[in-house]
Length: 295
Image (cartoon, rainbow, N blue to C red):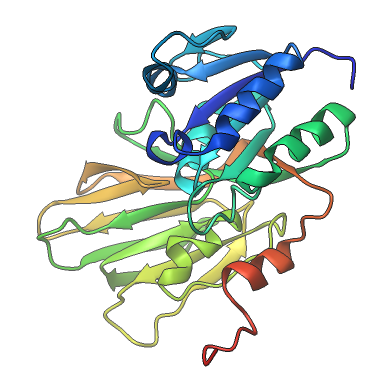
């Protein structure tokens, strides 16, 4: 591993990543390792602007037009989700460098970047595979990339009243939600939008999904946890005759009467983890479990 020439595709949050010296140290490290570095076009242009000149890299790419050994996300969890969107089914491991605030997905701190790269070259790391879900409709919506690492949300439009969502799981009718929306979350997304709506925290690789209503009309409606091998069918009614479908935050308006189907995708996203990374320690740290608020 140490002698192998590696290639990296780099995604960045321009506002945060460009301000940190560690980004430039990382690029210098990869140059000294003779790595092939490919940078997302918009991020590359901003790096060159800060340098007042061109940056010597192996290439610049748009969208998902890259094939590398690893992908590096420089930003918060939003940047990581964008990188995962572009990686898709390529089976490329993603290194998430946390330059945001919470960072459940981007778990490498800026000051640890060079240590992490040393571990990559030394083969001293773990890869954790995370499940992905797919949205299908009987229309042309989301044809380009219908996959979510975090969650798929069915939501009312801004000015609309609550919507009716008829839910079937595995071919069996479950319930009709009267609510502002419904979040179908993977374990990875269970600490995101779903959690803020009272959804359960699900441990990665647990083989489950959760259905969490957004502001339900009835107080006895609660989140449901199901196996991720079960197909979910949603039929939505709205007084505005349309609703929003959001895949990891990317939303589109969908016409009433469109049947929405959600199922497990045929691939997983691979996340690079340091050996000392533990999921429950991350939860304790990020959610401040056990912290004394009086201090």
